[in-house]
Image 1: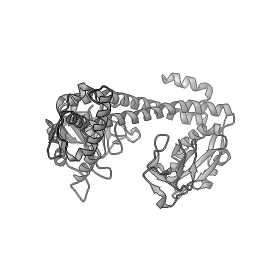
Image 2 (image 1 turned 90 degrees about the vertical axis):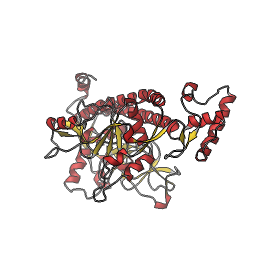
Image 3 (image 1 turned 90 degrees about the horizontal axis):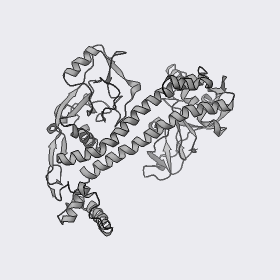
Image 4 (image 1 turned 135 degrees about the vertical axis):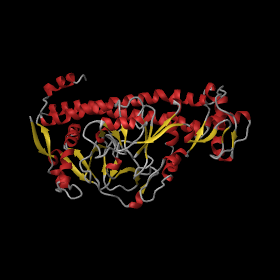
Length: 458
């Protein structure tokens, strides 16, 4: 049976306290410092700022609850950390109840939305608000454990997929940076051939020389596999992008584009059902897509967009072209769950002529300095935005097709796994979100939980 208990009866409430500003740093000195939901991830927060003199410390396993808008968001500390005024620590009095309380608080997140919208909480939730918060509670301890286990198993798999995707993305980016930004293979080949290396790469050359010497002492001719190293030139030439590998070309995005289009909004705006349309709220990074904020356009309107190429297709690079998030981008592949999808007037679709170039284009444009170039195209001071002419003139380094194909063959399996994880996590999230209110409200009893999974093919 589900009853209601005060949160203060089952957990200690510790409100956050911001330490002096001069104790903050980004050099990882001290404890990670979390200020609010901006630091939150799927389940565990991501460190951005550190603090040498923390005022409030959370321990691993403590629940972190946002007390400033948006109130009610939940994360869990996975390390010792400091928290500021935007968060509170919910520390279960019985550690065995931690996972159940975490899900109970997630279940109550819509409650805070209603409270904020009704003006009952002015700007932030107080310690008293949290202590008096009624949360669903099962009297039987084993029932609480069982619910936590069912939901936690789904959550753990979603979190595992997220972490795996972080690793896969880092690997794909690391290969791109090594080959096409740091020019590690060209520097290695130049060293072996005794060719001059531009001063701008002097530090990298010194490091490569050390690594090459170590490889040779181990009986290896190259640091990289020889069949890959042999694809790359052994000298540099000058270009408008600075020193680049011989035989490569400094070009413009327009050189490789097949389509560059933006979407549109139908007269009267979005509708409640129809064909999904992507906007800024959906464009949030590689393999990431916020399904909770989808908007829709009529099928006839979508067909008009499709006739001019403004429909989303595998291999498309999407760039948000105006507003506060100008330059934010994503890459769409066959994992995308919609057979038909449009973009609105705030999004550019960049579609390379050659399939093999499309992933290269995304990683090239997603470099930090290229993002700055995109933002620098802002051509309208009254209404910030970038135009097609500016995008077409963005610089791009064009290696030989064999090198592009080799890079693509290495990262396609990584991205395929990444997108498969995205698709799986979306299904698991939907299942968890369906189960959460039903289990917490008692609509589904634990004896019925197995049947619920079977009915959904899980």
